[in-house]
Amino acid sequence: MSLPVRAEPSPSRSTAPATLVPSSVAHTDPYRKYEVRLAITENEIAEAQRLRHQVFAGEWGAALAHTHLDVDALDPWCDHLIVRELGTGSVVGTYRLLPPDRAALAGGCYAAREFDIGSLNSIADDLVELGRSCVHPAHRNGAVIGLLWSAVIRYLTAGGHNWLSGCTSIPLTDSGIQAASVWYEVSAKYRAPESYAVTPHRPWRPDPNSPTIRTAMPPLLRGYLRLGAWVCGPPAYDPDFDCADFFMLLDVGRLSPRHRQHFLGRSA
Image 1 (tube, helix red, strand yellow):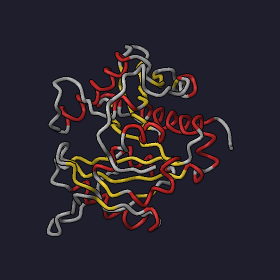
Image 2 (cartoon, one colour):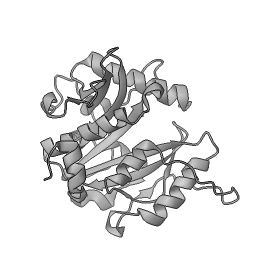
Image 3 (tube, rainbow, N blue to C red):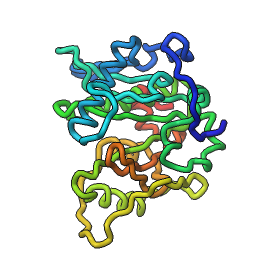
Image 4 (cartoon, rainbow, N blue to C red):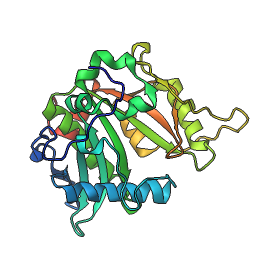
């Protein structure tokens, strides 16, 4: 499968390839405060897009085309995970997942717009792309991101996919201090093998004259690294979101028995 993005007509939800059975990923947290599952209806997808707009435009200051929704051409091809707060019914977390068969139909994955990812052609037919990650600011307590990660691993397992990729975005509203701190740390400890290295089309580079300040690792990136993911090269600059994007790659086969037990309720 070739990875570069090309223009293709977007499907409707009725004509897009069928998603997994929603129950394959649905579950609640131990305290039954939240539930994660695949969005089924257009309204549920719109709820996810509304949350994305709130976070990306409201917090990050991203310039988005729509007034109340964050929408792009890949959305109709993706499966959308949503986390609801059971007490209010509100969607408070979301990821979207683009499986390889639909990436081919859509003309490629989102990351190909920012990186040369030709090095991944050998695994493209087995690679799911994770994107548009966000959690409502009032619910960044670890429970929501944990449910989302659990659902992602269940999704991969149910679909028989062995690789996960995605761009982890770090806003540059702090003049790049956090992005620089993250890059110095991950480049020293978590680089991918050279055979999986990717190259940004528009690199983001730390200011060499700025002091190095150690900052907290963003939750999504921390989640990737805890599972054994690699950073595949220097970050790209995304001008639409004014952020540094780090390309992450996870070989599901590297998951430890402890993580399999945690996410799947079994050791293998």
